[in-house]
Structure formats: structure tokens, C-alpha cells
Amino acid sequence: MRKYKNIVILTGAGISAESGLSTFRAENGLWNNHRVEDVATYEAFIRNPEYVHAFYNEMKPELYRAKPNSAHLALSRLQQEYDTAKVDIITQNIDTLHEKAGSRNIYHIHGVINQAVCLNCYRIMESWGDVDTQTICPHCQISGMMKPNIVFFGEDLLEMDKVDGILRRCDLFLSVGTSGVVFPAAAFVQTAKYYGAETVEFNLETTSNNFYFDHHIQGKAGTTLPAFVDELLQN
Ligand code: BV8
Image (cartoon, rainbow, N blue to C red; front, side, top):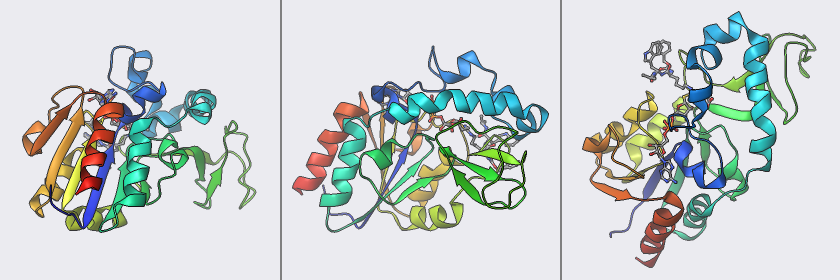
């Protein structure tokens, strides 16, 4: 393995599976118990904000208690010990397990569970408690305008101004635990590859994106990622 200068890791729900959190598209996944159109689209939120708030409020206690697993910890170790490269984490996950593992340079492109945004003043409120249509914005004091700071289908992603540059500069792109079906995150590997990065996919199975990856490491990320980080750190 060569020395890298800019390492980018894209993570999806699969990296949090061994922390006990449901993924989206598995048998007992999050989307199996709810129609995406009813909970994760902007229209759904406008149509029935109470229902969408309740969906995310119900998720908060489990995500609050969740603990990072060896895959999250391996990325934090890579950031701390790999001294010749900048290591950025772009996550589709709304959990805070990368933060709990001690990582930094984390870009939550689909938002994060313990934040809400005021649709009146567009400032962010942090809360692990329930947020709903009665919640008063702590900044502009207007009530009824809080939305989960979560990117619904049909909404633009967060942090893309920074993410685009990171993808163009990277020389190693790792994709961990994502089915690669949601865009534009699913196309990040194409950008990285176009600009010359080596690309590696970590998943239980081959995904629809596999054509764009130079290497596939099959297995549970909690096992495969720490081993890969060990190899990177030995070089
Ligand atoms: C956008 C909400 C520009 C937060 C999510 C029509 C109109 C508008 C847009 C579109 C349209 N048609 C298509 C689009 C684009 C759309 C899209 O991609 N749709 C798909 C379904 C075709 N994208 C968007 O709308 C995005 N915005 O394009 O804006 C725009 C604006 C207006 C008009 C046009 C364009 C917004 C996308 C974000 C949506 N929000 N969720 C939440 O509740 O979390 S997406 C949802 O899927 C989650 O955020 C999740 O992160 C994401 C991806 O899922 P994965 O993380 O990959 O999870 P999944 O369960 O699928 O897979 C887990 C994987 O892990 C599996 O492969 C499994 O094998 C593996 N695994 C499991 N265990 C392990 C493991 N691997 C390793 N180890 C293990 N132990």
C-alpha cells in the first residue's frame, strides 16, 4: 500500500449496524415499517409535520444510547495516527457515532438526529428531546416553524460546498456500509475516481455501485475496517 495524502471515507447505515442500529433497506429495515414517502420527503413533512416529527423523535432515545463499534473507532484511530494525510468522513448517517468515536472532520450530508432547523430564521437548534410543531425557535422565538435538520428526498444535501472539493482532492476513497442507491452520495465514488483516487468498497455484499471500485472487501465493517486501517498504519 502506498502513502496517501487525502483520504475520504463515505459511510452509510451499514457502519452502524453492529452498534445495533437498523439499516434502511434490509429485511427489518427502517423503510420496511414506514413508507419513505410518508416520513422522509419534504412534501410528507409539509403535509403532516406531526407524523414526521414523531418518527424522528421516536428514534432519538435509541440513537442517544447507541455506542460506536470497532468500525467507527478504526476511523477515529486512522484520523489520529495516519500522519501524512488529511482524513475526512462524509456520512449519510444521522446518528452521532462518528463523533462518539472521537472522529473530527465529519460531514453529515443527510443531516443529524439531534438538530432541528427553524424555517423562519434558518438557524439550528440542538436537542435530543422531542421537537414538534409547538416547539419555539430559541433564536427568533417563533413557534411551529421547526423542522428536523434532516435532508429529505427532494431536498439539497448539506455541506456540499466543502464535500465537492474534498472528493476532487482525495487519493483514497473508502465507501463503508452503503447500498449506493441514494444520490448524489452514490455518485461520490465516480467523482473521486475521475480525479484519480483509488477506491475501496466495504460491504456485506456487492452493491449496484461495484463497477466504480478498484477493490471490494466483503464482510462486516466492524472486522474488515480495523484490519484495513492496521495495514494503512503499518505502511
Ligand atoms: C437531492 C433521510 C437535489 C434521513 C435520506 C426525484 C425528485 C427529487 C430527487 C430525486 C428524484 N429521483 C431521484 C432523486 C434523487 C434522490 C434519490 O437518490 N432517490 C433514490 C431513492 C433514487 N435523492 C435525493 O432526493 C437527495 N437530494 O437529490 O437533491 C434535488 C432536489 C430537488 C429535486 C431533484 C434533485 C436527498 C437524499 C437524502 C435522502 N434522505 N434519509 C434519514 O432518515 O436518515 S436517504 C437514506 O438513505 C438515509 O439517509 C441513508 O443514509 C441513505 C442511504 O442508505 P444507506 O446508508 O446506504 O443504507 P441502506 O440500508 O440502503 O444500506 C446499508 C448497506 O450496509 C447495505 O448495502 C448492507 O449490505 C450494508 N451493511 C449492513 N450491515 C453491514 C453492512 N456493511 C458492512 N458491515 C455491516 N455490518
